[in-house]
Structures are given as C-alpha cells and as structure tokens.
Amino acid sequence: PTTSGSGSEVTDFAILTHNKVKHPLVDKRLRPDAAILDSDLLQDLPKGLIAETGFDALSHAVEAYGAKNAGAMTDLYAREAFSSAFAALPASYAGRKDVRLKVHQAATMAGIAFTQAGLGLCHAMA
Image (tube, rainbow, N blue to C red; front, top):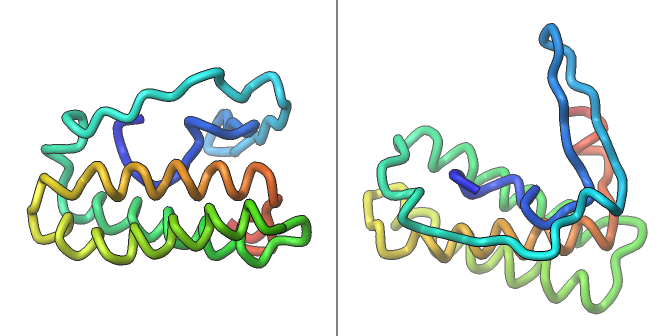
C-alpha cells in the first residue's frame, strides 16, 4: 500500500467506484497470500493524508474490537493496532519519517482484525 489506513492489503474486501458510486466486493479469494509494507512509499505523504489515513487505521481498530464476531485474537490485533497507531501518529504527522512504518503496521493489524471480526455500523454509514 502507498498510504497507511485502510488495511485493505490483508482483507477480503475491495471497492470499485464507477460514476462516483462505490460498489463493494467481498470474497475470501480477494485476500492476498502476502502483503509488502514498504515505508519508503510513505515518506512524501502530505500531512493531511497522514492524518486522514491514520484516523482510518484507528477507527478500523475500534470497529474490529467492538464487532459482533470479535474474539480473543481479533481483540489482541485490534488493541495493538490502536495503541501502535495512537502512539506513532502524532510523530508521523509532525514529520518524523522513522515512525511511518509503525502506523503502516498498525493499519495492517487493524485490517487483519476487522477481516476476522467483521465490520459494524461505522462502515455501513461510510
């Protein structure tokens, strides 16, 4: 991924947009066998995008933690994703490029958590 936030690099979900209408796709065959997290791709992101995608990672972690199918493993991933993103996001926003990978990893952990636990009302409204 070239931004940190959606966690889509490890999920069963994809969104196709046509004529400004989002069409969700959900299928286990969409989940990749591997995901490469390269923080070099994040080094020149504008501050606004760092904030938006960072909050996306935080919201995914919270949503996974409170999901209907949440369990011990998904809660573990969700808590770690939230605490890692929460700790690293201010420094990343302030321009510290050495912490960008931490936010990237947190977003991926949140993606793993919500893929297993499910999504909730937040995504339904989005």
